[in-house]
Amino acid sequence: MAHNNNQNQTQTSHSPFTQPIRCIVKLGGAAITCKNELEKINEEILHKVSQQLRQAMIATSEKPPGMDWSKKPGESEIFCKPEDFGDDYVSECSRFIVVHGAGSFGHFQASKSGVHKGNLDKPLVKGGFVATRISVTTLNLEIVRALAREGIPSVGMSPFSCGWITGERHISSADLSPVAKAIDSGFTPVLHGDAVLDEIQGCTILSGDVIISHLAAYSKPKYVVFLTDVYGVYDRPPSEPDAILLKEIAVAEDGSWSVIKPKLQNSIELTVAAHDTTGGMKTKISEAAMIAKLGIDVYIVKAATSHSLKALNGDLRISIPDDWLGTVVRSSR
Image (tube, rainbow, N blue to C red; front, side, top):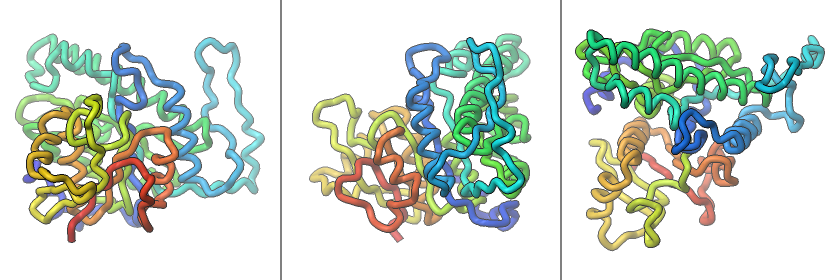
């Protein structure tokens, strides 16, 4: 991944982003879906996350009119009020990018067919590629709808459809101009982990975490928030009774990282443990470290809590209260 990041940094001069982005938000798949139930959304969490995003992005105290004018499952008619959008209606929306993981969408299809390993000549892989994309774009649509109901002008954007291509799983080309143009036009792009074409192995899975570090290198957001299903990064699996929440991680220029808070007696062992034992957190920390190296603070925090709202609002950029639960990953410079 280091090679890919260097490539990002050399190319940022060609960035299509004309104005700074305020925040990139990652909605973790484990937070917004029910992990053990195939293609089931955690409606309660998604609704709360959408509300918090509205509070962070739209300055008005009252909820703006909804933008999902489609029929909801089980209901007989479309509920919308186009007349709420009068010519004098003003709703300024902050420049955010949302990226979400797949959770219980896409993983079953991808693992059954081996899409991540490539080889489109195999009928099973080609079928799995299509099946995976049907699943992840279904989730993307539901997230876009949830945000739109809150009055956020969200538009779904698939990396595959935008021409993102990998080479041995590293991003080799990604046209970011559609994302930049959408933001300049007042929309909130919602991207997702996707099945994409790969120049070497035919196809692969591009994860949401990799998408975020690529976007961050070009769009230079003020801060990045990872919304997860746990309070942050722990020194061991959080299910273990003596797991310690790591409150602050500092990233050196070479990408290595160390725990600043709390002061741990055996912090060197712990950095290794945190890398190896928490599964998906290994990717999270390495991708968060890449973003932090660019001088952008990353907050890893539990979705739909008072702690996540503080992170989304940008409150933590001024100071981090002692009672805030989450992990901050920032440059040691």
